[in-house]
Image (tube, rainbow over all chains, first blue to last red; front, side):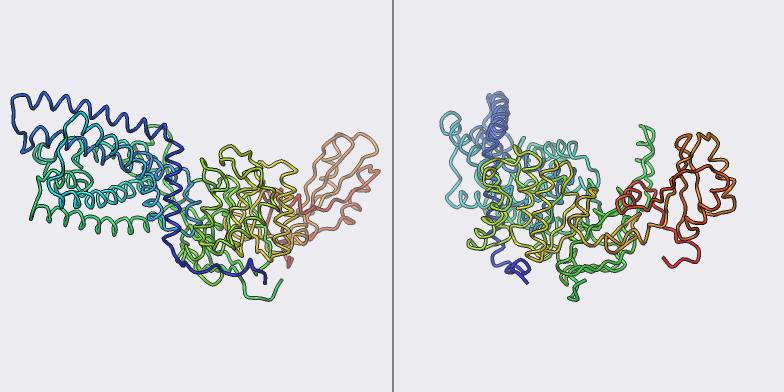
Length: 277
Length: 349
């Protein structure tokens, strides 16, 4: 038989496929630079509002919930820069493809769906990260007098923790987007998820300032790993044993989410019809 | 049929879906919220199918008959509810990724190109996804670009392509990894005549020269006639015919028509004819105009000779035309849901 019938080589390097996908996502994020920029600018409008709010709150006070005014400014700037990663476009992409049935195109390819989504988020994340951290650090140093990391070790662990948080957020968004297989209506979920993540990850305010039971919930859920954990490592509110505990919690949740998304994907794949005949 | 090992084999393959039953309106929506009700829908019902390497098979049936569901089962996107399926010796749903290397797919209603980036970048990414080495990639790519005349389209983002251009690019994208099997799901939907002709020519060449196994679902009779020697007809999840396209008339061609031309305008000729044919089963009389009469009958029960003899004494006819159904009219009946699959009593058809 001809060359067409010869099977292709068996997965010499699966990684390369996903690297290419990430590069493509990066390119697409650049193609949408208008949208990306607008998203980031709206984000900094939020930061401006929070700054003026905390300015009034700190009038005549040294500390609130263990944070000095300078800590708080640093917290807000970093929190918003981190939360800009895995933006709404990633969530919308995942949900949209399931709702419209475009997902069949992903599934006829030799690709693991979750790894593909991680690669897409990573590609977009490079651009999102450059813009939001660039602006945050620039503004922080020029106007808001943010503080440096607690120690060189804290700086290293901060970066490590941000990366763990990034994967956590992708998995959480992925898990929620799988719900679209059953509800087929993603907009409501997407809206709710954005707000819930902003609150429970500690983006809006540090977890220590959340009221009673919400705080308890937020402290055990994986969402804190997205923002609160890396930022408290940077500022030094968590060090020593507490810091180790936070990283362990982050890793444990990551492992759990990895397992849960695996199961959920299999269930969604088996149970549900694909839209559009 | 080639006597090699089958490339696609399904036995007792079944797919059931659970579908929510929602009564209409707000009340219905609330009711569904409180007590959801579901019905089970059998999209593909215990089908047996064997396809050998190098065959080209048209898979036809009305909307909702289970065509696309079968394709999705073969591509590994859906998990069968029951039965066995194997493509090149592996179960697609258990080894979706391995299976993906063995096939190309074109969905007429969806594109597999990335929407916002130039077409050539989509191809390059697919080359990486299928892990082609550079030399192999370039060879196949150049080949496809030449045959499908893609050169002017390479720098254009997919969203700016016309439907015909997009389809050419999608075809190339589905073959970039030189798969042994190509599934085409309604590939020519919305294409104009000249594009369709080129598309068919290309598929035929790939099939003939490179032994590509093709499985096609289409509503387009031209696609089916020109691309496929073998036709599998599916209706309500069951395979109702599997054989050569040209032999379909032997299986379903028993419904024949006598068209009579009358010598004088006879408004009640249909009543007279019905009376004359009283007692013959499977005969239907209609009168389109005052001077014509149409008799439909089951060719396995009654012959045209018998009918003409019965009618000649009571109806003033000048001309008789015996019409046998074409493959085309049979397929049209299938799509309209008016094809009858029942066998005549005592017939072995």
